[in-house]
Structures are given as structure tokens and as C-alpha cells.
Image (tube, rainbow, N blue to C red; front, side):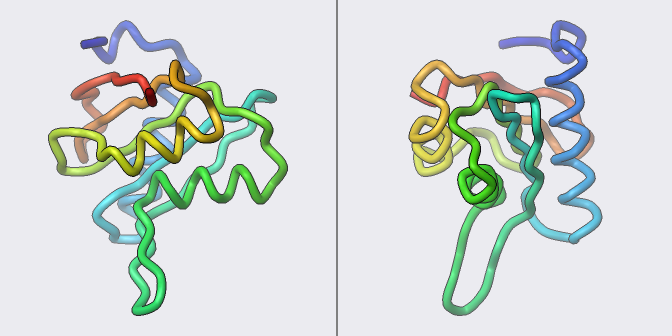
Length: 117
């Protein structure tokens, strides 16, 4: 597991953005992804009667809709112990199996780094 102090500034940034989205929108999860050009996409959980998406799935969808060709990294902030298979699959679809997915707690502390694949 990577420690928070081992993260570069760009990875710390996406954790901070994900944490802010979670708090601002009062949702269970916040997420952020960084594309191949360094652009970031930030989202919270979507929980409509007709549409349910995790924060990470929403952030990936926003990146795709904005023309991103790949992902460099992803982050999710939530009170969970592991990144779901569905979230890892969404990141893998755009970023590839080696794309790191950072999981942080609500306080922003890094809990785990996993590969999308």
C-alpha cells in the first residue's frame, strides 16, 4: 500500500477534489479522474430513481463525454474498505489495466492503491 506521503502532487490533488465533491454534495462517495492531458473530472454519487452510478463511474463517464482518450489515475473518497469491481472496470475500460485507483477515507487519508485490472 502506498502512503499519503508517497503520493505526488497530482495524485494528492485528485484525492482532495474527490473529497471536496463528497462533502459539497453530501453524497456517500466523491471521485476524480485525471486524463492523458492532465485534465481532471470530479463527480459524486448519482442516486436517481432511474439512474444509479457510483462517483467513480460518473467521473469516468464525464471524462469520456468530454473526449478523454485515456486515464492516468483515479481516486475515490468514501467510507468503504475496497474499490468495487464495477468501479475498477470503468477505470480499466478507459485507462487500461495498469491505471492506479486511489482509495481514501472521508478524511482524505489514503487507504489503498489498486490497479484497475
